[in-house]
Length: 150
Image (cartoon, rainbow, N blue to C red):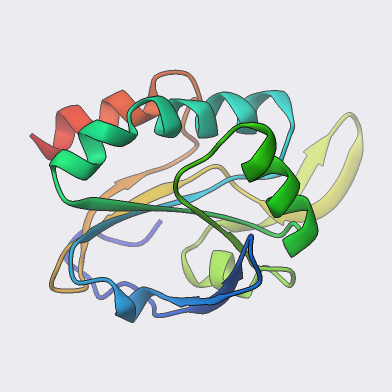
């Protein structure tokens, strides 16, 4: 995990609509959450949690960006199916996730492969890491972040 107080690595990735999004564009706090795969049970629970708490994030002037190694088309379908109001970003090679210590070897069901870890960072207005959450539980994670922001 990246340490609190360090500079957040910059990135430029495509969102679910194929538009380029850069961390540097944001002047407010940003929740950058990494998730393994769109439209799987845990990732759907986590995304719906951010969706359901969206008004609270907006009230606090906090942007939310979800990042996975899914292709843009899969992100578009995921965002549309669950009416997600925030941007999902495609990191197909896992480079941005790796920069955030959120990509590497995983073993599931006896299969070993490289993939995205379920980690979250809060990036402050100054571009520094304000909070880091490793191996988060999808259930209640959005509320946990909101509590910590307050």
